[in-house]
Image (cartoon, rainbow, N blue to C red):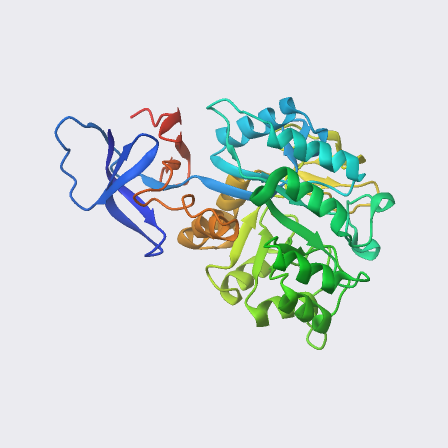
Length: 383
């Protein structure tokens, strides 16, 4: 049994940091108490003046450290999850790109059969970003492999992964998209509006059919205009879940601040959308089979189109706080509790009895001192 004493602990239910004692045993949190006295026989660690938050959850990322989800092999998944764990991202959802169906199925099959070492982040499932996207807003997705909505691929992925198929991205303007969304909802498979040129009315119909989540809001979709609010306006009116990339390139700080005010506090999810250059130096990389140039963490195709990010979620979170003026409690919630709820993972994203003992120890300046995964220190605070 391990006790963490005198820390300021982020409590999702209160949406606040509170001076509490955390008791951990067998990889789980067993107690949260205001009594700071060490228990008899317990190993205690005094974290006075430090912050403790849940391990971060990245529900949308493509790669890091020179590997890509679409590699479809165990080595790449292990490299990705080990890197993410070292950055404080203790759970994640690898995200596919628009590629041939057989390659997507290979990725899913590998994930199904994968066993990772203890130092690797938890892989929660798969997020299918493509191939059911708009050619007009395909961004860094390869338009050669775009397909009309079809249950065939999705049902094959679902057969492989079951509830670990977390999201299927869809552009609502594609022929048959609304029926596709409704059928997946009937099967309890979540869809998300993504890479779309649809207007407000069609986006609202898609949301009403079941696509109540929006992929990287603002990016690869029409803007929010005063007479044409588009899918962003539909998301705000319907109080849908929304992803934001706060890497400093995809969105203006003004827009990020506005969305933290306009979107319900439990519906906003920060993501990294990171690609293989994350954690590496500037240079030439790949994303979904396309060449990407990375310079000072800005990732672009040859024509200047943004191609994911080269920033991990921890750095996105701290950038949102330090450079965009987002309150720390709001940023933490958007990287922990909210993605856990969106993914249907109630034992993650909270520091409460019964939850996984995944946590980070931070200084007040948001320096990462400690990382715990399943009750084991990957990086001990060293106090």
